[in-house]
Structure formats: structure tokens, C-alpha cells
Length: 208
Image (cartoon, rainbow, N blue to C red; front, side, top):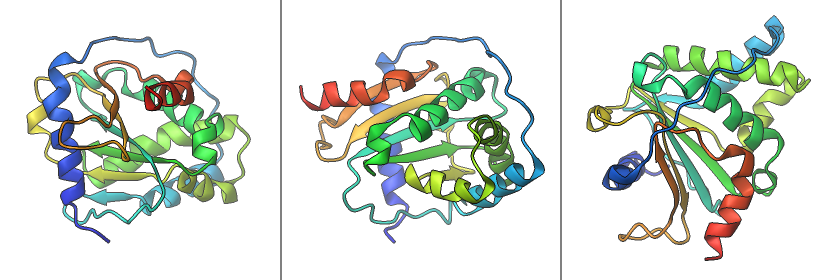
């Protein structure tokens, strides 16, 4: 395990680039059907292994994983009014449509100021209906979240982001990352992510 310094470095890298981020808003869209208690329970248990308080968060050596998606959000903030819908789209596309995820090339780092229990509840309310709609069995949920190498850091200090709209999204190519931030393939603030064209975006940016 490396120390949580990695998380701080990633956050600082995004702060530097926030001035140029755009602002877009979306509607809420259609609601999915209510998931079963088994799906809800399995989702909660899988998240409990992946959501950490900021002081206990570390980073495992991800080895060959090339791309990091960093997603900063706040379940209760008015500045994050599109977060729920955008996270639905993100998880649906990454878990069920991305070839890069299937290749083991994606790591998803989520950061929030909310406490650990609130974060788990919020993410369960987003993920469980998706699993239900996609007809995922309860015993498959843990492996699905493992496929995106999900880590969520709760209770983090987001005071540097008070003036920015959430979510803040950064997609980073770790093989290109350097002090000039050349590894940043995508950055946005207050905008929906590019989830429907996720693989195409990364492949296009990585070959430039």
C-alpha cells in the first residue's frame, strides 16, 4: 500500500486546471425500477470494501492500469445537482459498455466531502437500480465493481473547490502524466461526463 499522498497529488493536479472548465446541466431522466433487497444488500457490502474515510485511504499499486477516472462530487450540495444522473450514466457505460474496462485498463477514484455512511448510501441508491435493470445477480456485484478498480474517499477536504461546480471529472493517462499535466485527457466542472463515448475519447486523445 502506498500512502494517501497519491490522492492529494491527483486532487492538486485538477485544481490547477479548473479555471478552464465549462458548465453544463442536464435533466434527471427516467427512474429505474426498485431493486430487490438482495441486490441492495450485495451492493452495500461491495461498497463497504471500497469506500474509505480520508484518513484511512491508501492506494494499492495498480500495476498495468493505464487510465484513472477521478470523480469529485457531493451528495448533498446544490452545486452537484446533476451528479446522480451523471453517475448513473458513468457506471452504466463503464460497467457494461467499455472495452477498456474489460481489458483492466480503468481505475475509478471517487472523492467526496460526505461521510462514509452517507457516501455508501448515496452510491447504493445509484448502483443498485442499475444492477437490477441490467439483470445482474447479487453474487456478481463485487466482481463488477472490481472490474473498474473502484476506490471512493469519503470525508475529504474539498474547501479548494467551493467556487467550482460539481461534479469535477478528470481522466488521466498515467503513462503520460508529468509535472506539465500532459497526462490529462479530459477535465470538466459542473458538466456531465463523456460516458457514452468514453472509449473513443480516450483512444483519440491517447494517440494525439
